[in-house]
Structures are given as C-alpha cells and as structure tokens.
Image (cartoon, rainbow, N blue to C red; front, top):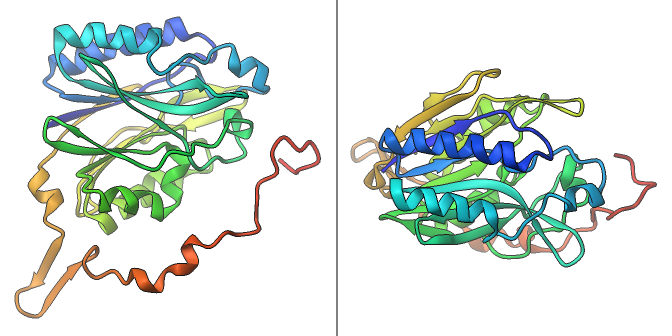
Length: 287
C-alpha cells in the first residue's frame, strides 16, 4: 500500500474552508496512487477552542457532512482517508478521528488520553478500546496525538496485528521530542510502520511545529516534513516487513522479538487504578 500524510494549516471554526482544502489534497494524493491518506488532528474544525460551548458549534456526527463528502470523492478516486474532527458526545464533544472509504464510515476512534490543551481541556474521554482495521490487506490502528505518549496504546494495537499506526496530531511548540524521538521509538519497539501527521501554523497563540513523519518498523524515518510548510509525504507499506517481528542481528547469536520476549505476568501494576485523576472542569485546577 502507498500512503500519504498531509501536513496542512487549519482555520479554526471554518469547517467549510478546511473541508475544501482536504478534498483538494485528497484528489492529489489519490491521483499519485495513495490508497490511504491521513490528515492531522482536528483538521476539519481547528483545535484551540477556549470554551466547550464554542467547540460544540463545530462538532458533527462521524457519518455527517464531512464523511459524506469524502466518501463521494472516494467513489471516483478510490482509496481511504483518516481525518480529525470533533464529534458530539452526550454532554459535549469527543476529539475524534474517522476512517472513511467509498462505502462511507468504516470506523471512528475517540481520543483516550487528553492533555490540558485546547479542546482537550473539556473534551469527553474516549471509552472504546483501541481497534485495528483491515484496509485492503493492511492492518491499520488509529490513535490521536497525546496517545503516542503512552506506550501501552501503541502496544495494544501491535498485539492486535497492526502493520501501520496512523496518528493524526496537533503537536505544538514544546513537543519537538515527540516528532524527533518518540514516534520513531514507538515504531521500533513494536516493529510497525508509523505515520505521525501534524499541522502547521498558529492558532490562538499556539504555534504548531509540523515535522510530520512516516517511520519504518526499524524505527528509521522514511519521510519527514519541515516545521513550517504545507507538505504531502508518501511512503510504501510492506506488510511482510511489519509482520516479521523477529530481528536477527547475528545469526545463531543475537536475535530479538519485542512481542514474543514480553513478560506480561510481570506488568500487573500497569492495569491498577491510580490516584492522579484529572479534575474535570475544575476552575481551581492549575492549567
């Protein structure tokens, strides 16, 4: 499979303009042979909303107008798309990523780990487990931005057979270690392809750092964008490379398999509840 990662700027609260930009980019990527195109986190809506009531104005169902427009285009071009948006929840919004094909919505992921930044400050926590989707024979897992800071997230998808992790992001200034070290580490430790797709530009005082990248299962960067420009990255996914988890460095003397060599019986502490619970909508909490 050939994939495309679209690094773009986003206009907060201007879904129509953002949608037209994404459709234009999708026409380009599919014409270049990309079977899967990935856009940044909240690419449809923008991210740095100050109030929940404002963000709710731009939320739409996963199978709403944006996904319908993508599906209509994909009926002509073929391929699939993953894009970031805000989805209504029972009492607010989810930060979501939607997977769409010519037939419509295939799956929706709601961000599980929420930082104190932008719309995530008051978004609802995603409660559905991580899931892997078969897209034309390539197993694709989906996370969003801050999820990549938690190794367990990517490992859960690797254990489900993911060949590729698609990570729409909004990494701001200060998060350079994510694009320069963490994405590569997550790819290497799980032997998966990893596409971290960031945005550029400034939104309500926050500057986004770009540096989108596609990484091989070895942890080596295949393609990386600049920190300032709109760019499209392309890469080919070799599922056999992602599925061969055993790395032989010296035949007969040195081999590693980071999935087979795990000791899950020793990791019970990872699933125990903790006390560092995030206050929700507490004005006294330091932000």
